[in-house]
Length: 311
Image (cartoon, rainbow, N blue to C red):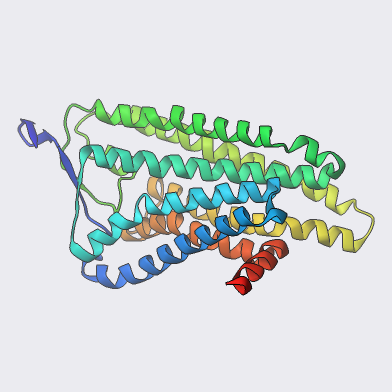
């Protein structure tokens, strides 16, 4: 560590606490974390594999789903192995650069997750609102452009968060009272004015999560308007069933995200509750998404059984 003077310094590494207040139960907490991580990895890998080898699934809806699955696997891998090393081996140290990289990847993959969910909402809207023009609107070129837009968005918005942290002249401590390098958890350690960081963090959260959620809600208002105007009950049910998996995934992601975000800034709950929910918010949706789509989507279920029977 580089000491600046007095009780402040510039750290070369940080120490992760894990779940503050529950250190004596880390071994027990690690069991569900490990199980969720394994299920998330295997489920998303299998989903991507089934979509890749099945010609029937080479459709825009499933291309979006395969990208979501890949992002989910990367998201949970960006922090879970380090959490487990803290729980199992008390390996709490993470380099300053490593901490910033983990922060960047966690928030970037979260932003991409939100973008993919927005794309899938738009896909469902076009499929129901204008099915005859679906294949001419949702093209490979459009999908590629959307991916580029979402990648540029996270790079442009998340990058300055790291730059602002690097500009801090000193830190009061290098102990992060969290289980991973979360943006505000690191910012609070700085021995400097953190107002700009806090405001910019809110701006990024609203620009990515807030705007995407509003657009997804708008998409579903328009989808339901079309569905309720369909002539037959069977047609309405069939149209609604195509949206059910996406609705479940959206609810699991944004409900945990909003709870974690609001409790971190405005809630008066014990720190260990907030941190547990922060971990669950990043780990639970990647675990649930392949299960939800596997159970609710007939084509995926059929292709999965076909693949398993062959092997």
